[in-house]
Structure formats: structure tokens, C-alpha cells
Length: 312
Image (cartoon, rainbow, N blue to C red):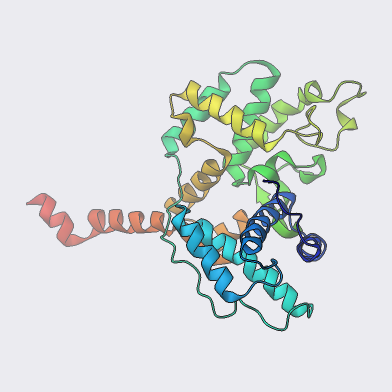
């Protein structure tokens, strides 16, 4: 059965997200998909998405739960509905907000998946063994990703102008168009310098030189730069070379690894929040599991009773 066309109110809401909040294309796609799913459900109950009542929204969440959807995914979909109905209320399309009295589905705390420092070093060693231009690019991508904790979309979409004149930092445009400075490690700086010498190999055919592309990592893709999908594929291929389960390696896992390793070595949450580009520190607090482990180790190593127990 063909999907019902999405309503003009949903389209207007998505346009607002793009124009006023600077929502990324992937964010807009996710909202569109979520609201399309709700629209289909509401239509089966004889309602439109914009005219749905609280009972229909509750029934929708129950339906998601019965289908086996994770509470975190259901909560994300409810969040999309909350913003949609808040928008309709503000625009006076509706005289009420049907989500105002609803609680979010209870979601368990999911710890971020990350690699050990030894596993990251194995990935780097495997990248260093790669020869030629492909190897130089792969090492640069990996070093920058691990040194700065960038999101995959931020990394592949870096313009040439993102690098500071001294080459020590990157100006990164994150979610909502917000900019932040990301520091580069010495190995990342060296890897980028090596990559600079072969960057022109990745330019689309017909270009006159490396300066013709505005992207730091150009490619022959439709976007003109390396895609997120290709970046993920390259990392999984590298995981095999490094002897690591490819299912455990992705750009986001390396972002988690960057954050977890920094905290384990003494970084504070506020600094980490700035480096990761989190709007709210509560998002950064998912990494406090590392602090918990560090405190346990500190007690075991430094507490006089723990030391006495070992001595005895």
C-alpha cells in the first residue's frame, strides 16, 4: 500500500527546522521519516497528523512498544512529535498541545561503546602499513578523528579553510551550524602534512589542481567530498587488518573512544563538552562511567585499607 502524502503542516515544520534552527539534512530526514510513520498510524484511526489527539499519540507509542522498538527510539519519536505539536500550537494551527501532559518512555542508560587505547593503536598501526595515497588519506582521517573526536559528518565535510594558519586546530561547524575549535595532536598534524602531498589524487577528473576543490577530503562523490558511508567502510576494512571485530569499529565508536580516553586521563567534563560540541553537558555525562572506573582504581590503589589488605 502506498504511503499517504505528507501534510503541508509537516512540510512547514521541516522548513522551519532547516531555516531557523539550521537542522542538518540527516536530522530533517529522520524527522520526516518519524512524522510520516505517525501520519500513517493516525490515518488508520481516521485522523490527520496535525489533528491527532492525546489518545492517538499514546496508542502510537503502545504500538511501537509492541513492535519491539527500543525505549530510546520511542522516546526519540515522541520528541519529534512534541516539537511538531509545539510548533503547531505556536503557529495557532491548533489551540492545544496534545503532548503537553505526556511522559517520555522510560529509557535505560546505554553506555557508549568504545575501543581500548591498545585497540586504537592497533588501528593506527594498520593504517601506517597502508601504502600510497590511499594509505596517507586513511591515516590522516583516523588521526584527526581520534585526536579531535569529530562526528563523521563533520570530518568528511571539513573545508580546506577549517585548518588554522599554524595547523594546530580545526574550525568545525557542528550541529545547528555552531562552530567550535578542535585541537589537533602532533601525529594528526604530521599525517595531514603527508596527506597534503597526495590530496590531488582524490580530485574529480577534469579538475586542474588540488586548489579547485574546497574540501579537505575531496572525492568523486556527488557531494564532492568523501561520504560518511565510505568513511565507515574504510574503518571496517582497517579493523580486519588490525585483528578487531569489524562490527565494533565505526566513526562514532572512535568519537566515544576519544572522549572515554580523555576522561580516563584526567580531562574534565566541561572541556570535553566543548571539544565534542555538545549543547548540553547532560549529553557529555554518558561518559562518566569512565570516571567511575577511575575512582574505583584510585581507591584500590591508594586507600590505606586496600593497601593493607594486599600487604597482609
